[in-house]
Amino acid sequence: MNREEHPAEAVLREINRRRVGRVALAYLAVAFAVLEGAAAFLPSLDAPDWAFRAVLGAVTMGFPLATVLAWDFDITARGIVRTPEEPEGPVEELPVHRWALFVGFWVLVGLALRMMT
Image (cartoon, rainbow, N blue to C red; front, side, top):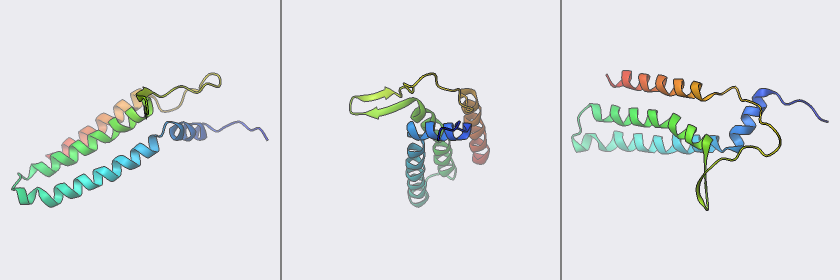
C-alpha cells in the first residue's frame, strides 16, 4: 500500500534520521545534572545570588544551539561531518526553517535574561 506521507511524518522522520531527538534528550539529562550540581554546590562556595541564574541562562541558551548543530552535523568515526541529504530524489522543504529556529533561539535568550533580572 503506497500512500502519500503527511508533512508531520516527514518532519519526524527527518528528525529521527538526523538524531536530533537523541541529542535533545542527552542535553536535557546533562543540563539537569549541571543545574542540580550548581544548586547543591554554589551556596557552599559562597557564590553570589546571580550565579545560579547565570548557569540556568547558559543551559537554556545552549539547548537551541545544540539542536541546530545536531540537525546539521553528525559525529562519526571520521570526526564531525555534515549530515548528508537524503539520496533518494529531491527533499521536500520542511516546515521548520532556519529563520524560525533563529527567532526561537532569541526568544529563549530573552526569557533567560528576563529570569536573571
